[in-house]
Structure formats: structure tokens, C-alpha cells
Length: 468
Image (tube, rainbow, N blue to C red; front, top):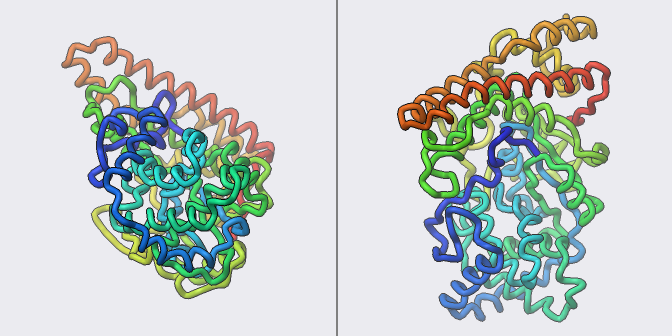
């Protein structure tokens, strides 16, 4: 899995205080509480605030009976390649009557949670998971707050209805990660009063981050499982993912750092957005190990410029009927609003699909094209004709490999401005002086990484994703 060298992975940097969930010693915003303490606090809150859910749960019994939980084995796993529209793709699958889905990234932490909270019954897991998801993934992982919120009472009643239906099953049937995934998605659908087109709808799961181990775990649970990756013009993605990494790292070291109120000028770790960007994108532009035959990619640009055609291909690949709802960008039936550059929109936006490169020099673009030739050609993106020759790619890489990228200069400037100079004024002389060594060390590390990538890619040993 990708991440900035020397930094805590941004996937764990969303431990922010919740405005909607109960607070207490069992949820410490500065760190993740021990699982037993965390679970006890959530379950105690539910016991203390328990209303009479019997009537509501009874009303969901008939609907719960329409789902063949164990038979729900069709599933597709959405993964992203930088900022390439994984949320957008998931939103187009939201309102299909043969699909079970939750808003991105509400399903992201399922396997981590299942392992950490193995001591809980599956019913308690279902009750605790929404709190864990929000504290792990922030607002995007919330169940009961935000633009896509579901009603907490209806969710708890859904869990109660499923427990009443399946509690006679033995622990061997209930206490597996496969069953947890199935029951979680059915409970979510029941909370929304969704009636399935058939008893065994398809699940949409958001693994999101590239992770071979997690992908193998998912396929072990669901041998028929598929992968849908999202990809984007490599030049635009390098530019956009760098900006995202810079934001993530600045936010991760700022007030969001474990909720402790740290500021970027007081952090004890350095920014490394350029190294994170390059390492991430050059590591994630392939299928998960051993998963090529069950993996396909959707181009970001197609979702903005040719939506119906690509969604028809998506429907065929994942094995559902094409429906007009697949042209509507929603989560829980509500519009999914995108925002970029102080502009907001819902669904396709062709202007957002244009190539951008404000964080790349012209030499950077040539270097990227020479190094990532398969990504350009296999995915159908504009590519310099000269670089179709192996000798030309080798020459360009050899000459430009030693030159720092523009994003390295930008990242170094941010590090000096936001960290080194303030540290020097605060008397943290060693930290301030260490910034230069950090910048040099990241340049050398990046050169080593790029040399290894070049050796592999120039020999034709890099496998790219197949686009739909």
C-alpha cells in the first residue's frame, strides 16, 4: 500500500472527534482506543439510549426474508489509481435494484475491523462497526451523519431483524468475515427499506487502496469476486495526486493529527508529497497480484465524456442489467456533490476531464511518458510518437532521471516554509537543519525507486490493467 515515506499512512489519519456519535473515554480522538474499550463504550451507549425497537424490527422481518444472506456471493471491489473517480464510479452504482452498496468509503474498514474486534459476536460487530468506520475514515465513512446519512434507529432495527432471522445458526456459520460482509450490506439495505430485485444481489465493496494481501483475503471470502479499478490520464493524475498528497500530509500533520491539535509548524515529521505521489502511482497501475483475469479498469475521462457507454460496459462486466439509474450520481439516492476549485457539480463534468499539468515541468511530462509508456498506450491516452521507440525512451529516462521533478521543488518549498523556518524561530534547530538532509534523502530514494521501475518497464515486465 502506498504512502509518504516517513509518514503515517493517510488511511489512518482520520481520527477526528465526531459531532454526531457519542463521546467518552472509550473513543479517544488522540488515538484509537483498545478494541475492548471501544466496543464496550459503543454497546453501552446503545444500552443506555435503547428505545423500543421491537416494532420497528418486526416491520423489517418480511423485508429481511427477501435476502438469501449466504447466497449473496456476487461482489465487485472498487479500487482507485490516485484521483481517478472511484467515488464517482461507486455513485453510479448506488440506486440499482440488484446491487447492495454503501457510500464510499463506508465499507473500507470492514476487514480491519473484523480482525481487531474478533471477540465480538457478529451482531455486536454490526452495531459497533458504524462508529469505528466514522472514526477511522472520517465523514466519508459515517453512517448516521452527512449528506448520505441513514437513520440510526432503522439500522439498529435492521440488525435486530437479521439477528431474529439467523440467531439459531451456529458460530461456524455466523462468525466468518464473509458472513460479516454479507450481513453488513444487507443490514444497511434494510435500514433504507430497499427491496432487492432478487434474493442474491451483487455487493459493491470499496477496498479503495491497492493492497495485494487484502485483495487475496477478499477473493478467499468471495471466489467469484471481481475488481473494478479507476484510472486516469497519467499526466493529469500525477498533477492531481500530488496536490492531494500535499493536502493530506499537511492536514495529517495539522489539527487532524490524531485530533491532538498539532500544527504543521510543530510537527515532528517532514512533508514528502512528491515521493509519495511517484511511489503510489507507479506501484498501483497494475492488477493485484494474481488477479489480472478478474480485474478491469474504468477510465476517469469516460465517466465524464461517454457515461452511458461506459456504464453499459460496467454492467456487463459485473453481471447486472443496465438501468437508467446508472447515469445518476447518488449515494443512498441523494445527489453526490463533487467539488474542485470552488466549483460544485453532480455527475459528469467534461471540463474536469481535461489534461492538467501545473505541477509538472515539460521535462517531467516527457519523463513520465517514457517511464509509463504502457499506461498511456494500453489505456488510450495521448503519447509522443517519438517515445514509441525503445531507444528513445531509454535516452529520455537516462537524461532526465537525475533532474528533480517540479513537484519535488514545490514540496521542498512547502517543507521549508511551513516546517523548517518556523522550527528555527521556535529554537528547534536540529529539526530545522534536518530538513535539508530529508530533502536530499528523498531525492536519492526516489532516484533508486525510479531506476528500479525503469529497469522493469523498459524490459516489458510491467503488467497494466485492462480497461473496459
